[in-house]
Length: 402
Image (cartoon, rainbow, N blue to C red; front, side):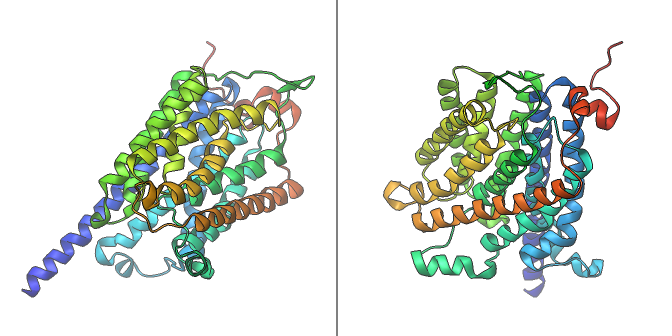
């Protein structure tokens, strides 16, 4: 009997390890989506830089999270022998891989906002600092119960802050860090003339669309596999992810008046918003949450560009920052039993937790990017920006003119 129990336990451990490994690979693949979404949106002279930033950001993020960020969030280090680390089929190692791909999404999000005028090495440094300290600080508070914040919310409002797959922890934090970076960098040259917006049209709609499709597909790993074990897998999460995505598509189509940029970002807005409550909402609630997110993105992207003159190239603040905040609050509304959800959530906790995430991200972003701006500078000089980041930084163009 002991041999049978041991075999069953090994099988369960191995299955859970494989499950979360597949999730990690799917979220890793999403970074190709971030890359092509940015490549398709920026002008031709900045396409190479967009690709290089996403790849190198991932590299420095992995190192920063391995040595510092994972320890900040979960109190776990990897300064042990390989035999100890690989116990239990190496599940804890693969769990790190999965969570690291989430952490690496922070600089990938920021990259789209600061495109076309940022220096290379200072931004890589900022990415490393954000993933080592800012993101894991809030991640640990919400997903590991650090500093008693969740316990306080539960005592005060009857439930902790619920963020199943990171509407606020990942996307909200990334979007609000991006806002800080965008404001510190300033507006691209020629973007506004006599107070009016000058259009910089996307360079490649097919690449933009490819990026959106890759992200949409990978998002099912992002959400469903946030359960982290096979016994926690939920078809409800999968269907809610689907319904929020299509809600974002439909509303961005209508409100965005057939604009392909809005249509391909609309599903991403819905997916960002549903992460927090995807495990507790009714599918109709998820459809509404995604639909509202599509409207938020289109309207706020238009307002920030035209009225507020915030030069956020891909609209990552409205997409991730604002739709992420909406998702955090929406989990407290549509996750309630009164609206067909599973319950166990508190609207007040969702509001307070969302505001806490915004505060941590905005302050952290201002400190990290502000310090680097003061010490070495963040922005390309005027000639480099005019020539484009591809030639100025990488000494090569994206396409041959032969």
